[in-house]
Length: 171
Ligand code: NI
Image 1 (tube, rainbow, N blue to C red):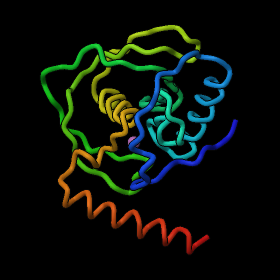
Image 2: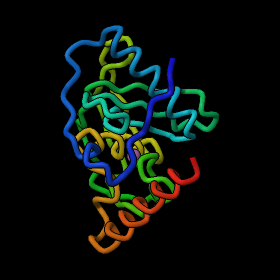
Image 3: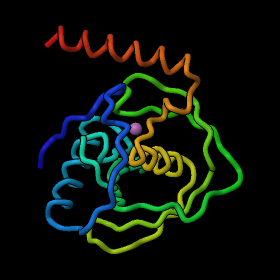
Image 4: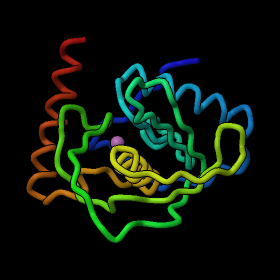
């Protein structure tokens, strides 16, 4: 397995729309294994292929308390969204150290293929619902800061550009 490089906002590649996975083969299984390893190494609860510059519909997540229940969703589709909304504080491995409150449907039902290529359905609420919607947004080129006001987004963009310059200087 290998650690993958995570694109940082405002990298324009984060706004790429991912294509469906044609077949769950060895290449895709290697990608999901590397994504799971990268997610755990970065202490994230979710990661979309878009974030590692692979533009295919693959996400991994683990919202379990012990961080020992990785979930793989290939070609995920939302079947149902609850009418009631919930606000949660979100962060993103592509926007380090930025957190803000985002409102989304409180519960969603998602259909996807697993690592074995078999279809399954996930009924998600709480953190899992937030996470799966956040990661699925990545697959359509949407980063959570896109929900914020243009003013806030500009401030984050400036902060991220400065941070990546500082990171380069340290190296
Ligand atoms: Ni994210």
